[in-house]
Image 1: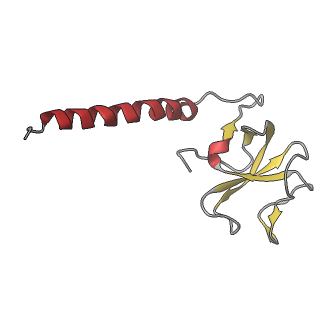
Image 2 (image 1 turned 180 degrees about the vertical axis):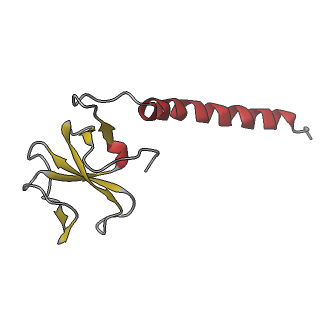
Image 3 (image 1 turned 180 degrees about the horizontal axis):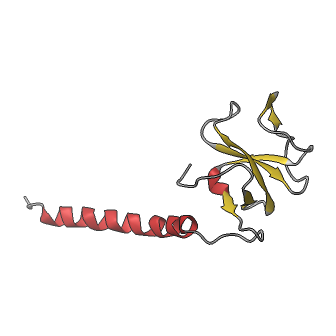
Amino acid sequence: MSGKHFKLGQRVLVTGKNVKGAIAYVGCPTFATGNWVGIILDEPKGKNNGTVRGHAYFQCDENCGMFVRPSQLQILDVDDNPMETSMTTSSEDTKTSIPNRRLSSVTVAQRSRPTT
């Protein structure tokens, strides 16, 4: 799950949707491939009640359930403020630094080849 370890009941912010809630499911559902996180939202801004295509993953009020990819979540602290973690900052650093390292490795390898 992209390095993030989510726990049931943990408070999160769904980025891009600007909604908060608590984690109620973590795993690989039958409706899609890969890892998903089921959230019980604080407000009825979701798409379900924890049941998708007849399979109950968790229970909540109608339209208070939402499934998202782990990358769409930001963990909240005890005061419901987004936590600044190494997971959120390092992913940005990694995106910019890895291509530069790869580029310099390729450039060095090309320079060391004999010319014909």
